[in-house]
Length: 475
Figure 1 (cartoon, rainbow, N blue to C red):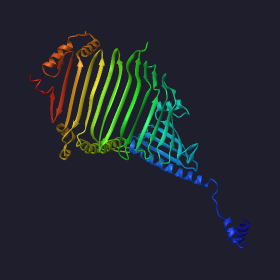
Figure 2 (figure 1 turned 45 degrees about the vertical axis):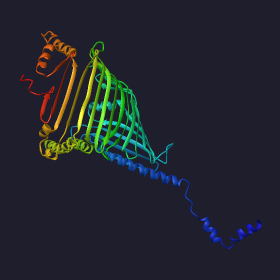
Figure 3 (figure 1 turned 90 degrees about the vertical axis):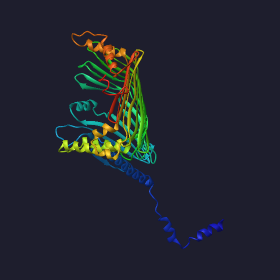
Figure 4 (figure 1 turned 180 degrees about the vertical axis):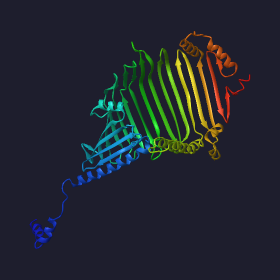
C-alpha cells in the first residue's frame, strides 16, 4: 500500500502546472440548467400562445383581435388580448370588448406543477352600450370567468373553467340570478382535437315591469371532437347533454307558467367520410304550453354528404363579407358575396347533400302528432354552374314532407282562436267541414281520428298525396 501511495505521489512530482490546470476546470453554477430550461419553456409557451391567437380569425370569424401584448420574463410572463365583435373604426357605435389577462408561470416546475407552463387567465367585459356598462359595473373587479390551464411538455393542454354565481341588477328592478358554471377542457398540443365537460346551475331572469320570469335550470353537457382541417371551426365528434328545465312565467298577480320544457336530453354525432360530412342529432323532453300538457316531445335530424372543405369555405366567405370593416359600398360588397356564394353552393350541390328532420313527434292527451321533411339535391353537373342558382334548384333540388295530426287538436285550436275573435262564437263543426272539403280535393287524407298528408317536389314537379299538384283543383 505504501508503495502505491509513493508511486502515486511521485507521479505528480515536478508537475505543478498539470495539477493547477485540473484545478482551474470550470463548473456550471448551481441552478444554471434549471434557469436554461425555464427560459426554453418561456419561449415555447409564447410561441404556442401566438400560434393559437393567430388561429382565432379562421376558427371564429366573428371575433376580432383589437389588441394583444405579451411580456416574457424569465420565470413568469404576462399577456393581454382584447377581443370584440364589429368594426372598431365605426364612430358612434360603442363596442363591447372582452379582455383576457393571463399570468404564465414557466416550467419545468411551474409553481408546484411539473409542466411546460401553468396559465391563470381572467376574462372581463368592457365598453359597449349602457346595458353592457351597467353589467360591467355590477360585476365590479371580479372576473365573470377564470381559466386555469396546465400545458404539458408533449401531451395535452388541460383547462379548468370557473364562472362564479352572482346576482346582477339589470335596471328598472330587473335582476339576473346566475348560478355559476364550471368545467374541464382538454385539447391536443396542436389544438386540433378537444374534449370537454361543462356544468351550470342555470339562471333566473326576473322583470317586474313586464311581470315575467324566465328560468333556465341546471345544464350539463360533454363531448369530444376533432378539426376537419388545420384551420377553421368545423369539427367531427360527439356531444351529449341534459337541461333540467326552461320555464317562462308571466302574470301580475300569481305567476302562471306560459311555457315549460322539462327533462330535456340531447345528443349530436358527426363523422367525416373522405371529405363528406354526415351526422345525426336527437332531442327528447316533456313540457307544457299554457294549459296543454305535452307528455313527450321528440325530434330526430340527420345530414348526409355535406362536402366539408366547401362548406367551411362558404361559411368563412359569408362571415368575412358580412362583417368586413371599412367597406365603402355595402351593396357592392353584398353583391360580391352572392357571386362567391354561388360557386360554393354549386360545389356543395354536386355532392348531393341531404338534410332532414326525420321526425318531430309530440304526445299529448294520449294522442301523437308527427311531422317530417327532407331537402336535398341530385344530378348537379358542371353545366349547371352557368345557370342562376334559383333556376338550377328548380330542376336539381328535391323536397319531401309528411304530417299526421289528431283531428281533436285541430278542433281545439279552432275553438281557441274563435274565442279570441270579437262577436264570433266557436263552432265545433268548422274543422270537420274544412277537412271534408280538403279531402274531397285530395289535399289531405282522413285516417280515423287523424288527418295526414304528404307532398314532394322533384325535377320541377310538385305532387300532393301521390298526385300531381293542380289535378286536385280540377276535380
